[in-house]
Length: 369
Image 1 (cartoon, rainbow, N blue to C red):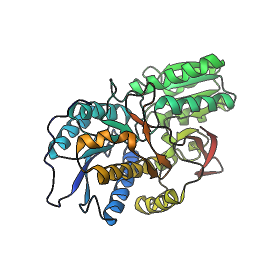
Image 2: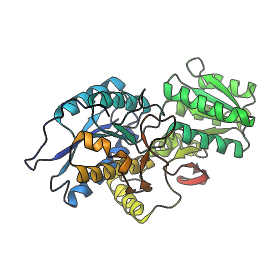
Image 3: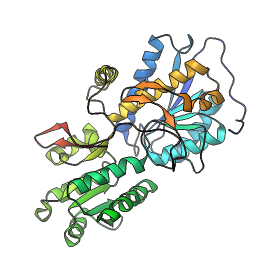
Image 4: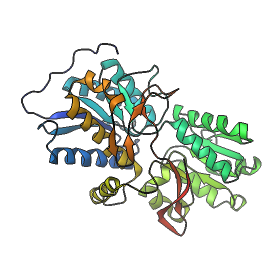
């Protein structure tokens, strides 16, 4: 490991141990995801403090809103490093987490990424960054297996420009092509939702995947496709998880159901997971998403590391391979995974689920990885 730049001052006066938190809390960030992530982070921090903190010092979260802006996130990392935080946690958007990870790596600041899945969070392998969420390649290959098992071989993707969506398209194409699947890419910069419907008919697609932003244009696309009689048999899918959150059901009503997406939860929660689910439901006043569990697990890991090694940044980064923490969704341990540049939990549980058409507030498990 390269020697880090000088750290912020060590606190020995009984003041708090600070963790910098990055979350999208305003548009164009996915605000509901940010709120769930923060709820999980805050719940875990409050439990750490109820149990005596970090060596008797309270754990304090220093929260910064990234608003899905990579430059804003990088600036927040610089600020938090100057404030002397022991580590960074959080972020939902992959392109934002990538900017934060690059800055954290440059500054020698440990970053435990909660919820962003882009495989290449950093250009080069780094010791400073670890990740709770599964990499995109792993989850999206499981989604591709689900498509094939459901009988879909002509798959259209409605895509917007983004390294995240482009990477997702490539993963799907690389995994499906050897198995007889075809991926038809439709550029949503050039197509209105009604024109998209014509393309789906012309290409004889049996599935359409939404590789686009939420709420728009995703909501408009779903409405157009659902109300086009020519496409009554087409399956709409959303591997990135747009239907996970309550806002999706609110905006789309009955059209929100039967749209399979990736969710990182086990079929049955452990006693710890069930207890945390109850506490998160109370905090959020709604059912917690998998993103809230990712937030909780992030602080559980960092608190364990900080208790063992103190608030020394280099020692925190050196401890990733020795982590063994019981999280809400299984035991969390980090390893080096081929093609992944950060320390990776291999693997969180992965499901393909959808909202039940008979009861859109209920989720059906369609496939497990």
